[in-house]
Length: 414
Image (tube, rainbow, N blue to C red; front, side):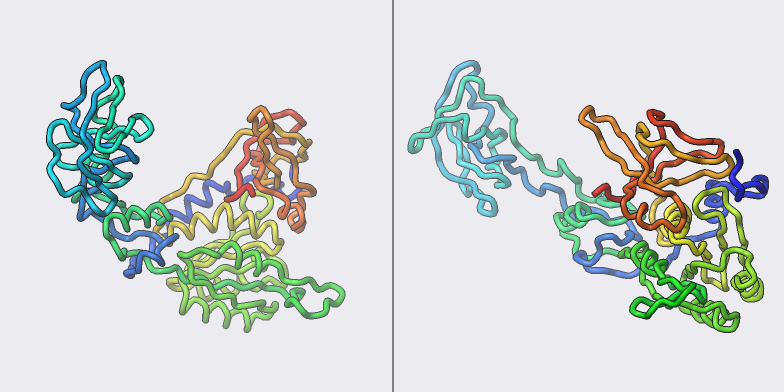
């Protein structure tokens, strides 16, 4: 059986081919800004950061215990050392450690110069100023050497890199208080269509509430983006042209939903032919066959389908990849897992499908997946239940229970 929408299969562009064309067209933004470390999480590092100091900068203890010199060990037998002081984190022992002596030490505290070993406090017996060490005491244990984490003048973080909490911790440990990052990507988006109504208004026959803008608002919630919601633009050629031209003047990217097909009321194609350079593609994916991509001046344009699930699928598989590239983020390979399907899946040959699924791990550790429900491109309830895409290749003609499929987890499985 053939997908009715795929009868023109020879004219359909594969997802990979569409991505290749887009990625070959786009260049990352180059403008940068300096930002305080506390506000840099999620942003893209623009220049490498080198270490001004060693990490750690002093030899220190990896645990609470007693620091001593390995030369004092009596091989194969217990031995006593004299306790001469304490090294606290932030308050090192100030004396010189002599043969036959040890110091009480706490995690992170600096080792005395002669000490090269630390024993856990649970392994010794301490009585006043005498500490009994066991016969199996091992040398050179539990010591963090100078620069064992990061050497002075080495690269702490290379660019480009999207900064995570751990990266901020590494930078702070090295004394870095600000970083140079790529500026935010400015993105405007709006929905098109006379049938769309704002929340809070009473629906009349033939009208629907605009869900696409809320979907895009959620998808575009990213520290790297500065986002402008332009609302709903009716199917009016003059208003649509004004909105597009205005948005292109002040943004890096415009994303629209609806009007990407060739219906009588879809003016987007006509307008963009006059004020931009835009290609209208039919992509071999389901949901989300129609897609427009191009530019209005220096502004990149994406025209997505009108159905909400098609909006999400085309954003996830195509637009998000382009936005990461524009933001200067390193390319990210989508995580794919193999899972055993627990539901029969209907599919016609012709387009690669991204069906919505619920991925779990059974008691044996095996990944299993089932359909999240009806797969129409307007069925938001199934997308809300889903935590993954079940990826079915173009040639697939359906899946039986027990067959293995490829799944792509959403960002969170919670």
